[in-house]
Amino acid sequence: MLPLQDQRVQDQRVGPSPAVSPVLIAVVALLALLVIAVPAWLVANSPRVVVHKRPPVMISRRVVPQAELPPVEPVQLQAVDPDDARAINAAVPFSTLPNPAARPFRLPGAADSRARAIDCLAAGVYYEAGDDTVGQRAVAQVIINRLRHPAFPKTVCGVVFQGSERRTGCQFTFTCDGAILRYTPTAAAWKRAREVAELALNGSVYKAVGHATHYHTDWVVPYWSASLEKISEVHTHLFFRWAGWWGTPPAFNRGYAGTEPNVPQMARLSAAHTGDAGDLLAPELTLDGAPVDPAAIPDEAVPAPLGTTGVDNNSFAVTLDKAMNPEAFAALAIRTCGERPFCKFMAWTDAKQTPKQLPPSPAQSAAMSFSYLRDQNMGFAKALWNCQQFKRPSPVQCMRAQPPAAPAAAPTPTPAVEAKAIGPAPLAGIRKKGGGNDPVAPAAPVADRPQPSPTPR
Image (cartoon, helix red, strand yellow):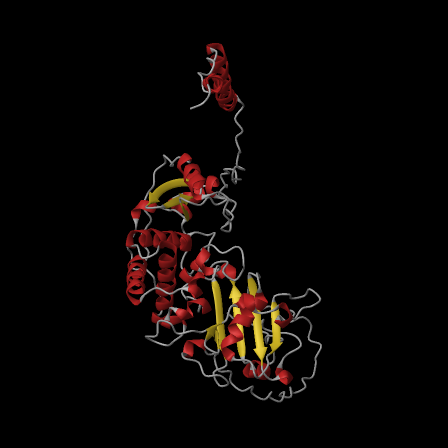
């Protein structure tokens, strides 16, 4: 046991602690409350900082007068996210004006041209609307509406592939973003798309889109969107027409050109564009089995135009490397023509036959190895090979054989006629008072006039 004195010391050490003041507890609690409450109040009552996104730039609404053809704007999209795009598109009201249905369209022309039109339209509806019959019918009606409108080409393929030769400016994005080369529809999906195309080209009308010439999905905002009248909606697609007279039925008054061009991009899908019947994937722009992208051809491989002095910057007379694969001729021509709306590309494998100026002589024309002609205003683009030099899968890809030039005939000598001073020749057919007619003077020889050489089409 501890001594008594030590016990008292121990008791003092372990004795009860002095009481904490209630005032001190209240002060500490108040400080803790202020530490939490003051920042919360500042956050709740401070000015809110809102980050405003740059609003989309729209083309202002302008009603183009009837005397002025409305411009066809390229597909350029605003930089907005899909949710904002949907909100912007929903804020655009639908037109309250009548939305009459278009007239039926029945495609004329030869069987091969019809087949090319059907396949171009099938590609348009498939790549624009997917494997959706309703969406495909709506897109097909827009393409036919464009065909009839003065602002667009006058062939089905010309409408679908308008602007596709340029990196920007195409009217249907799949024709210039490489989608048609990256993936291919299944045989069943392609069959369904062709059925939709055939119906549309045989008089079927999709009434809901009326005379729409433009459309886009609701998750994008094109620059031209606010400048047109929104008239209908099909699934996620919004359909538009021009405001004023150009959006009314009388404006759709143009006829069909009659012959569809051969489109190189369609070679992967269409036997009509390659001539290889039954082969869905038959390539045309291929090199060693791989597709040839015209944009991949380097600048140094692109020839200069024939008119370097500015006389004719749309014509090219080119000597091809004999080792070049003929399958790549079309890609080189498209790359060379660039964004020209009109372009003539003529090529020879024999440098001695390549002309220095146009038009080529008959012998040079007969020796031509390849030609490519583009006329965007006519919706025309066609590539042709000299099939005596290069075998092609179809005769529609062959140049017309040129007949050999006939030797010039020797001039026939004209007998000399003794000139007599007989005065002015009497007028023929004038009856005199005496009842007789003046003798008819022999007609003076008319010099042969040079005939203009037709431009190849």
